[in-house]
Image (cartoon, rainbow, N blue to C red; front, side, top):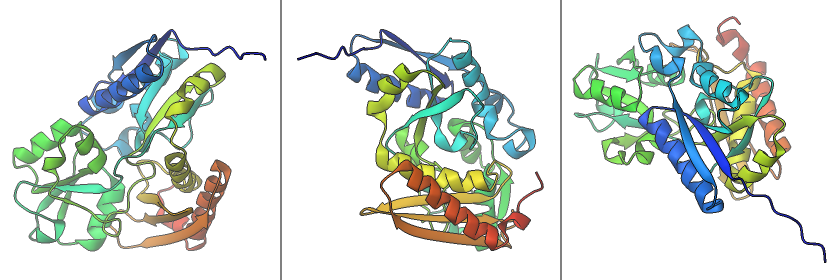
Length: 315
């Protein structure tokens, strides 16, 4: 009997943004890798990205999601890091040539959270109350359902945003529930928005691990961290967004959940003012990533057939 030689990594470097949430995510991946490979030296290379530095303008006006990943990709390209950990909703739908997502980890709660010091729910806010968000998707949902509210941009890391709320600059802010839960700050959540109130962004709540292409050994090392149900769900969502040119300047949502063996995918495209919305949904029995991608493309086609492209900003 021929024994197969199993290769284990001796050293791995994780590239990460230096925000508290990003470092938590990198440390979580580090700890998972240490459990898999106890003898491996796993370290974190903390970096500040342009997305972290530019806080006075919305992402849609300064370059979009790629601002959070570019410096990390440079570290991968130069060999200073072996993998980069991202909040998947911050990862562009088209990765640059030479990079790929090696795995998607099990998803946390993908819903949006209502955070306020004075109110329990969006419906409790009085006319003119200021609500902060950095997302055009959230803004479109808010303006559509709560036109009496004043929506203002809110940039910065999680602690910065909460600090602005606590200073009284906003009556409430909308954040991803996943980040608050991961940092042990679930107590700041006054209520969770239903997907009918605020359909999540593609990939929200999931962690993606990016590597340089052409490194099959890294794919093997990271394979145990891949969560197939989460990977298929977010693959369908990202396919919708990719087909519609999804970026920070597109008010677009795509969210799927498993119902037994069926994946239920919902998506919308809207104008920022929330006045025009195209919606589509589909439920299918799926068993592969390619089927998930095809499902996403089918939902995107439904949106396009309804006139979604006319709602998007010119490319």
